[in-house]
Amino acid sequence: MNFHVITIFPEICQAYTDASILGRAQKTEKGKGAKVKGKKIAVDYYNPRDFVNDKHKKVDDKPYGGGPGMVMKVEPIIKAWQKAVGRKKDQKKVKTLIMSPQGKVFSNKLAREYAKKYDHLVLISGRYEGIDSRVKKALKAEEVSVGDYVLTGGELPALSIVDSVARQVPGVLGEFESLEDERDTNGEMYTRPEVIEYKKKRYKVPPVFMSGNHAEINKRRARTKK
Ligand code: SAH
Image (cartoon, rainbow, N blue to C red; front, side):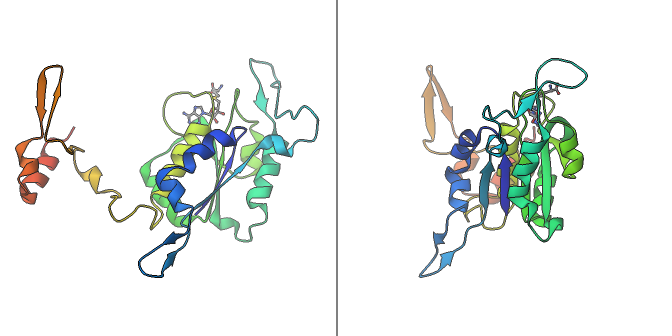
């Protein structure tokens, strides 16, 4: 899966995607023996500022019809998009998402669907008041929201989507990291030490988790659903 993130803050985002599991998934790995495992994902960044010619590198302008704030201009975003995926022959394998609090709310179901259906996911991240509405039409993009709250920019939403789609790509999670089975449970989990002390109170791991009785442990995990 190839992710293409269009943002005026690529450095902030890249620090996140280069770390941990997403970072590992972008590298070739040495497998068992002489086997070399390929890259599972690629994450590329495109800064709309690199696609403007005027010397002020203006990516925003005042809204037509008045109102507060600034609106992100069309051309730098379209040019960034073209650089990212404009030449891909099979455009059916390309999906373009615009981060927007008015969009369809993103879900794990969509993450799974995108990981299966597409080879290229373009994520357009807004700032200021948002993005000129023509971008959506011109690029046949879909607006997605990460929830019923408003952020100052689309970077965190774009990263959330990259993250959740990437972990659905086969091989991104290692054999010790679980994909979805934790969702059938209540999420209750413990690790060492068995007893911790905090503000003069002792907190113990429930004995059933120490019992080695997996049937009982599974029952406990299923029982106390939130
Ligand atoms: N003035 C707009 C908010 C703009 S927020 C309004 O009232 O609706 C600025 C940018 O942050 C948006 O263009 C979008 O890309 C991003 N953003 C903010 N909240 C978001 C959310 N819940 N989901 C996805 N993107 C969001």
